[in-house]
Image (tube, rainbow, N blue to C red; front, side):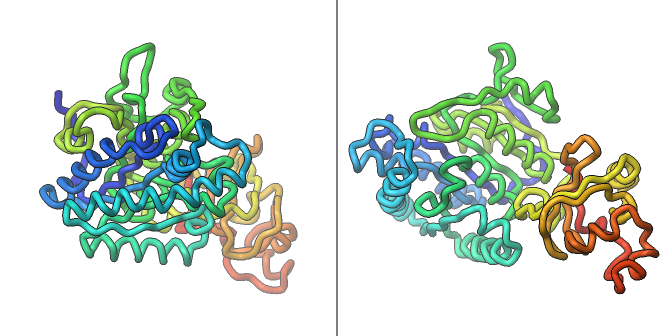
Length: 366
């Protein structure tokens, strides 16, 4: 059956997980990787699409070389396995893509690389230049040095941040499951991710990977909010990428909302949160319903130590985050002017940068 993908697809991010990339902890499944590479090559050369590959598997590949049958629980063995496996993984990818007459480029990222605006833009420029050279960028988390990515993170989140980074039109997450299920039936299309859809997701505990359906749903949620189409599908399905691009009804399709501008995508989903502010009900209504900027009068509490230009998490009176934005004032300055009208800022501080604490152009409603 056919299922139309929204919009024109030019740039795709494909994420592959350890569960389908490796053979039960005994190293890389080369036959599967060969099939994946052939599909990506067909998309690039025959369909004239730009493809970025976000790959797991470094730790699992290292486990195979080290003869480990289960994922190490301690951090140093995980990092050692990643250091050994990353080279093995790229060697396989590079040789297979070269056989398809395509070049590859390895990029290792951490959350810090995407939370810093300058490094974020540098990464974006590098990736877009590589795509212009008809190269297939291959991205992985830098598990050899990044504690957070190994302990808490997964490549589902990284893949959607990369999709945001390059403003892709489609993210395809390939896993060992067919998609999202509801009472034993595969959900073909999700128009909106609400609490009912979120309850359908169940976490998984794998010897090889760190993600589950919950992490995939979280990635899809960010995609939808950013205007990017997302598909979660079974990577073991023959020619899965080619069939999805031909609109076959496979996996679960998550439909996008209105696309955010690039800077707002970074503020909402990549920037490092430096502090929190709690706003009253009137300010929340002004931000959400009336699309206004945030003024100091609506701020009730200030948490953290931050500077002007930092990204803040904006909470309501029940301490639920509903927005993020770049602040025009530091934490010490906001402590003095919170609850005051804008025309009192100069009298209190001795200066006034702006009337707004967070301007609408630097604000994202989550």
